[in-house]
Amino acid sequence: MNARVLRRRFVARLTKGLIVVWPVLSSLLALIVTFGVTSGLLEGWSLQDSVYFSFVSSLTIGYGDFAPKTLIGRALAIVIGVCGILVIALVSAVAVNALTDAQDGGNE
Image (cartoon, rainbow, N blue to C red; front, side, top):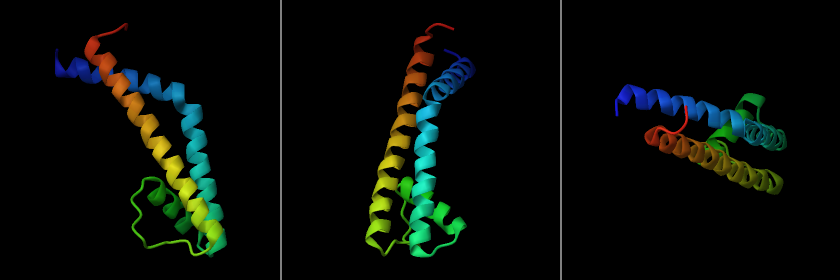
């Protein structure tokens, strides 16, 4: 199969799959930001630092430059991490499904 055709099929199916799961994906992203901002308010961080913390934590990178000290902040960090893992799993599942469909040819 031509690489260009495979790439086009993959992108088309990935886009279609992401549109289908967008309500769940956007809800998870909203939860990540909301819990990050809430945790940042409890810890006394700026809004910018709070959003940064939420996405670094949700992607399970965790540089350690911001770490919650309060019990509620730590609990929210755990929830942020779980939501981030769900986002990664959802996008990965859609990508694998799109690649499989693109390789099979499937219905146009």
